[in-house]
Length: 213
Image (tube, rainbow, N blue to C red):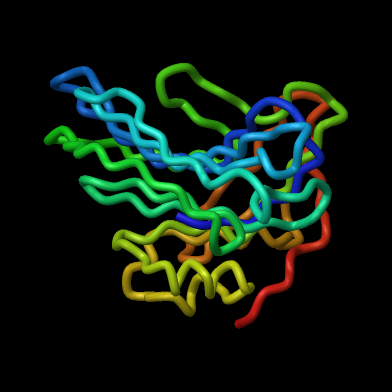
């Protein structure tokens, strides 16, 4: 999964995107997600790529910290995560990668898949924005049903459109570009609804990050 984000947060965490499906027989679920971790120190700001499965519960990979790492506030940054049965890899701006290598097994009989933007329902629900002066923008949200290479993640971080990266495996793509109506449409034709969770968090349109293609 991959997306661009822009934020002024310097504390706490901001959910970016999650894919989740349920196993109603076992009364459990399987999910993977990306979360933005804020910090007052730039080099400590990270991206978390996490999975949830019934056996291991929550497993996280986080991008590197220290000199040359971290994301800057109030500018566009790129986040990505690659998930396999034995490895989770988090990327920030095409690099700073971090991994977590515990084997996970998705339950059988998964149904009712849900893709959430700016909210994470895994374990304890988390929603974007802890206070009204915090800002989060997101764009070019995409999920593939294959494992992208580090070179492909680097291309996305340079601004290449997700539709140019292994398009045959592009499962979900929401550029989040204003359409002139109240709806934001996923690029393969799935309607998406923009929800307003209160007057303090009213969605607004903002300049889109540069995109190639």
